[in-house]
Image (cartoon, rainbow, N blue to C red; front, side, top):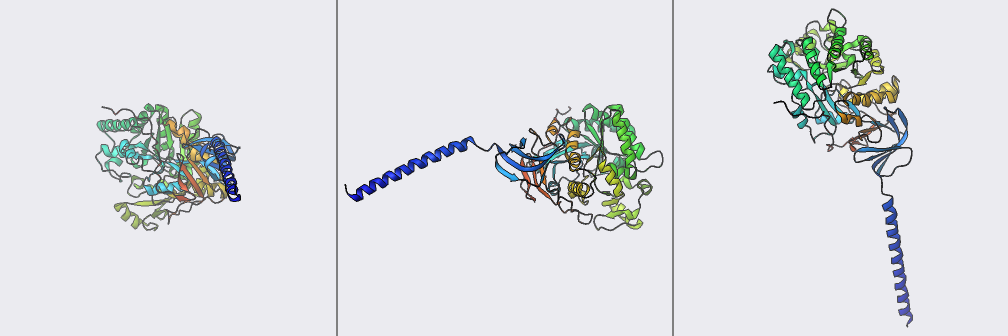
Length: 496
């Protein structure tokens, strides 16, 4: 055999040996990898986990699979994707029970504020099926709506749909006769059969609706074991009809019917009388009544200047005057002359009616949850949650971080979960809970929207997940996300 032939033969054997070795190594490695497949779709590593139900506030790793939290652990977790959350806080997604704006622009402002579920429970709708159908499969956030006393009243009296009725309109001022009341009750009952999670009532906008009508609506809510979310009837402390008689109306209706009651934006309606109103609600709860309450972290409200809120005597009731009103369209403060002009045309007006002390005391009260009353033209539509976390937790220390997260997530979930059982899986960071989550920077989170520029998104919200999918990633809204699901009670067959 020649030297050349011997070399080629030896070289060929060497190549074959190397090939066989590489195959053994490759397939052996594959078998090792097969045994260590990532257990989770996504892992948040080293996050400060805030679970208000268990009072957990500690660094943990959180594993998510198929849109559900599967593990909260001190041990390392393996995920197909891992997010290093060192120095950041991981909270349940915020649940807003009082959000009027439900356009895509509104939803993205809410998402950048950490909201994962937005519900319109004060005003509501007259057509539950149509409202949900318009949003199914099209929204980044979970969404819900009440069957609304105001829109149903407008429909019964033959008025065109509007946010709230104008002062002087029949739906605002007229007391219903027996057939009209029967029709209103029929429509509200049908809305509850079609899965409305709650009943919405704005009694200050409908002064013609007497207390008998209120009780009749509460009876319907009791039949479906749900709550009436109510904008109370009166403001101020003078005369027989005042903020105290307003809250007593709800306490009496709840006591007589067994229905739950939820007081909307208590600091906005009660103003400087908020501590006394909260005392009355606390007393009622100690007697066994299911009455809950919400507030928002701003000293001004917003509403339509044509509404019955500005009927004669509004200055005395609210203890404010023309200069406390700010016209949204121009930013100007009103005078008697401009008030009367805009009152005829209609439009949104900011109402500066509160003190910072009132807001702080309402936020820190153990009963209150937080809801934005969000609507275009007011900074609360964009900044409510970050304002609480940044200004009232970090800067003013009115609340601990865990207390604030409880008010933003767990308490709203508990308000709904008896009527909508799926909410038992929200407002928590525990195995089995939905992966509606907010990762934020506790040192940087802050609202940026103002009364002059109300559409500036909040800062410091890093990631937001809805049902396990990112809707905000690295502070950027993922505009194609449509993973929001309906917040809806079980649907019954329509009445014939």
